[in-house]
Figure 1 (tube, each protein chain N blue to C red):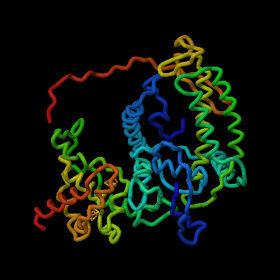
Figure 2 (cartoon, chains in turn green, red):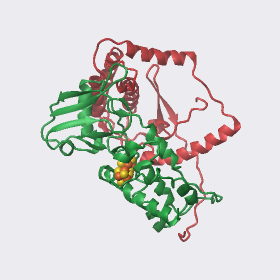
Figure 3 (cartoon, protein in one colour):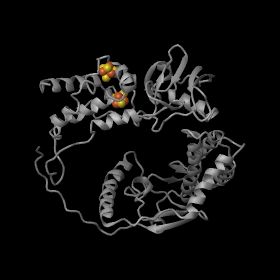
Figure 4 (tube, each protein chain N blue to C red):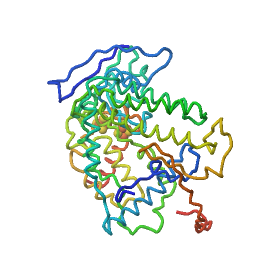
Amino acid sequence: MQISLYRFDPDTDESPRTDSLELDLPEGRDLMVLDVLELLKAEDPSIAYRRSCREGVCGSDGINMNGRNGLACITPVSEAAPRGKLTLRPLPGLPVVRDLVVDMSQFYRQYEKIKPWLVNDTAPPARERLQSPEDREKLNGLYECILCACCSTACPSFWWNPDKFVGPAGLLQAYRFLADSRDTATAERLAALEDPFSVFRCRGIMNCVSVCPKGLNPTRAIGKIRSMLLSQGI
Amino acid sequence: MVGGLYAIGEVACVSVHGANRLGGNSLLDLVVFGRAAGIHIEEAMRQGINRRGPSEADVDRATARLARWNGSESGESVAELKRELQRLMLMDFNVFRSGDNMRSSIGELAGLRERIAVAHLADKSRVFNTARLEALELDNLLEVAEATAIVAEARTESRGAHARDDYTERDDDNWLCHSLYFAPGKRVGKRSVNFAPQTVETFKPTERSY
Ligand code: SF4
Ligand code: SF4
């Protein structure tokens, strides 16, 4: 198989380059893209990428495969490269640390902004804050996010304003707490999002939905936040 | 005991599940002891924690290990040696084991230690160097693999999810205990299991309401 791999090590390289590599894949098995990276790394240990759980749970190995963001560990080679040539690049829009490793600071800063924790100023009960099954159900499709950044780095609005637009991943989590029956900070949360950038930079391009490896729908969550903001009359 | 160093879950090895290790075991360990450790840490922070820093010798050992890899100029690759370690552990220290195979593989592990000690780190970059990380990890993996192997061979019985074909029965007279491993000298020790009765108040069944 032919592989084109983005390489850059600021310690030794003046500028990024693309390596063209050849790899013999085992017959009769459809490897995941992460397996391909591991095979390449066994030959050339200097290839850098993040990985950990190798089963789509930790969110470390978000990369760009043939133009599309996804998790290398759960993307079959046949799906990433149906025409036989695999092109691997770092997630777009974030600064590259080395090879396929990007600096996620900007992404995490946006996540931190939305206060991703439960706020409840009433005294905690003796055991736990209960929630009805119906209210719990409202969090489905929201809490499963693994913060892989595939969505935000596929979003043109995030590319242009990564410092001001919260981005699909952050907004999905913002709505996760807005929708939580146990959270009492709804008004403050909405107030923090009402500026023209945080939410309203979303143009409904839906790139985020099409790449999310967990099948989540940030665009819908963003729509719900918009209606909450609008019904508040801002 | 190292004051201020907390361990929970499988590294702490409190053995809530005895000789079993089924999928999901680690979760109970994490949830129960993670909470207990959190409560303990909060309390300890309030009272002033008695933390022990590293000694000069600790730091020297750690930097010597790093310098060894950084200074390596040729030798076998980390990937090659790791593959070999994986093969040994998968073949001879799986659920079903035999004394003969374990003893021969323990010999091979000792040989692997010598090879790892002169192995080569090709990538010396100072930026996000995962090759260096994997080299250091290989040192650690070997330590853990050897501990696992030597203790498994020493325990001459079958228990829970551990089956030996040369000792097929459970042996409570000799092995109703935790196995301990001391890396210096590769020594195996025993620690008795705490059977002191613990009483927990039962919950009264009530209707579930919200
Ligand atoms: S729908 Fe909004 S958040 Fe999602 S990719 Fe488009 S602009 Fe970005
Ligand atoms: S919403 Fe999906 S794509 Fe975005 S960070 Fe979460 S899991 Fe990744």
